[in-house]
Image 1 (cartoon, rainbow, N blue to C red):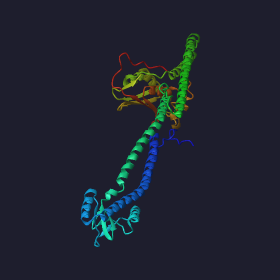
Image 2 (cartoon, rainbow, N blue to C red; image 1 turned 60 degrees about the vertical axis):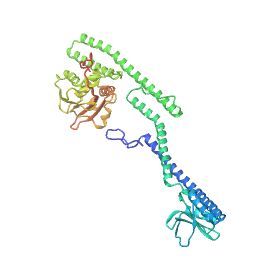
Image 3 (tube, rainbow, N blue to C red; image 1 turned 30 degrees about the vertical axis):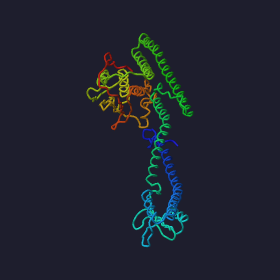
Image 4 (cartoon, one colour; image 1 turned 90 degrees about the vertical axis):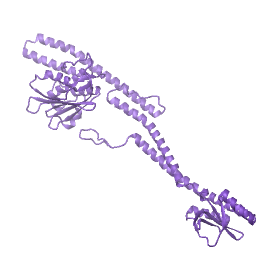
Length: 467
């Protein structure tokens, strides 16, 4: 199913997250869920055996204490009880009928521990949380029909607290998320490199798009190899296209020059001679467009005065009665550009406005030119007051060889003017787009890099380029 389109005919952008965060989120969710599940499983598997072990330890302490009491005389018992209290924190004292005790809190594990103690010490064994409001772990047992309490510190047999399990779980989760981030970054890196390379290909930079063909992953190596082969093929096609266009255009100019000379010398009728010379001039202008389109993409940028550049382009056009200009530029606007290329782009825009910017029934083209500086850009806007173009054709105006309805009958139109402008502006690190003015007409919006200095020594503004 094709993606929905916006008003300009482009696919609508969808809200979403990057591949890195999606991979990280899914891996993190998997690892965190696994850590929680393992924590619960280990806790359940560990608690019951530890409870039985604790009950056996308590039973052993009681049995040893019972044996010691049974085999000691009355005088030795006092010393024995004192030694057990001082060294082992075990207190043995008689159990009185008036003693008030609180049994252990009811739970599955406590019931299991009490049952284990009673199976080893006897059914009359009592396990309590406190006796006479004294907390501790109290075990009630009998020795020769005498009842005793054995009090010990409950912490000696305490199960691991929830805090310990929480710390362990948080540590496992933190390590899992760190691992997920590393894995997501490792997975995402080749795709990110491929995305950057594709963007450079889109901008026409075929030389800096080579991907690593020696990576360890077989699938990524195959993708990189295929992508590099594709870019080399595209670069060769682009080079062949430029050579072909430049060669054909250059070769055609020689016979055109001979035709012009022959026309001037051999046609006696001035009107016919002027008509033929005009046709030859149109052919020469078309050839010039092809040469501009096939021009190499490398340019060197200099600080250029945009004010002077606009004035140099407008100077030969101010004498034309069918053109009226309204110029509103900030003072001292400096841009990073190639002076010749920038002048070629402005000439193409002014030629396009003069040719197609007339309103219905009006033979004068009005062109508004404005520019202002932003933080690191200079924004230039050229607007005509013509009939404009349909909205569905707006994005196609910069496509090579596309001509709108008003241009189809023009014999000297190649459909390359705006394409050349876009190529030039992009080569200089700027941006170019077209829009429809609110009051009618076509707007050309250019953003160029801002420069603080002036023209370097030896670089001067060129005279307007014909065609």
